[in-house]
Image (cartoon, rainbow, N blue to C red; front, side):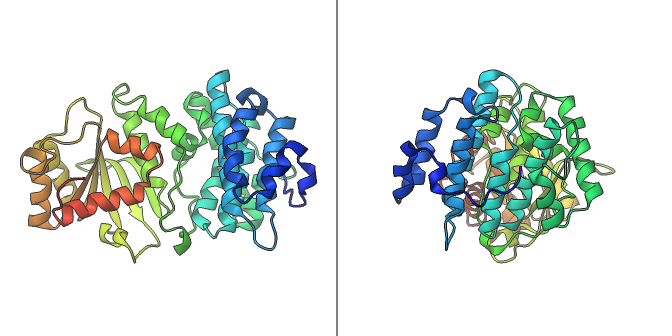
Amino acid sequence: MGDKDNTQSEDIPADFQAYLGARDGAKDLVQLLPQRFSPEQIANPSREQRIWELLGLFYFNQQPKRRSFEALSIFSALYAHMLTAQSTLQRWVHKAMPLLWMAECLGDSGFVALRKRYLMLALCDDAIRDDGKIDADNSGVYFRLVWRLGMDDAMLRQYAAESKRIAAGDQLRARFPEWVLQQLGQDWLTEFPSPAEANQYLLNPRYVEFLAANLGRDQGRSLEELAEYLMMCMPGCRTSRRKRSQSTDYDIVCSMEGFDVDFRSELGRYFVCECKDWSEPASFTVMAKFCRVLDSVKSKFGILFSRDGISGSGGMRDAGREQQKVFQDRGMVIVVIDRQDIQSVQQGANFINLLRHRYERVRLDLSGQ
């Protein structure tokens, strides 16, 4: 797919023209389009899929100032509808087109790290369709990553082949390019986030829902994947999963890049996440052991992902009391994220802000949530 920057409003069917003239037309289109076009109609290249794309491009191509955020909302809605099509049809659907335009909208807004992530998501989806290959002549991914962002041709082709191999190993999870990208690692992430995207937090709520539905069923795998995904959606957060030292298993290791002016500067360069997919709150013993892990890596911050939270979460007993005492004694902040937090993020809460509130609650010994 190439650029279509010459799109004009007259290319759009007449019954949509009134929305284009309204100041809040994009908002209405995001609600209307999923009702007008069924998931089956946009699952494959079609007239309906093209109309949806043209409506997004109308806002993206506005001059003299593009309306990139409105375009982003329309392409995001198309991506979500394609994910619905996958559930309806019970098969994989090619979704690279909206992902590419989402990347363009993000890049146009100065979000360099997010743009790269969405281009990589499109690469994963194209690679599944094209049997592990990227066609330089017909793919919108190739020239964006190689010509514009400087990715080495051999590296791009390696990522494409690896994406296909990963997808073949778990076809259900591979319906989400976010999962495929997690398995690729993050060596592709060579850009530091810009100040403009510092507090932007974009994720795929359908993918979060999919992983959350499997909590308690697969020996903690889904919680680890979910925790890593929530972290890697923070611009500037580089993650790796299931790392092992000579004495300790690390569920998720995180490193922060590019930010030194907000609360994330307090997190340190490296920190660790622990995952407990248990049917009961994590105990005092869990909290104490996690503290020792953080001590071993000289970290002053950690995140405990526990499906049912921690015992004594009010802060006066058990693990809740230990959480507060650890900060008072060692200056170490441990943030706890439970399934209610995950649900709130799935419903649109900004995970960065949630972490900030949890951090301040421990550091300042605040009551309540």
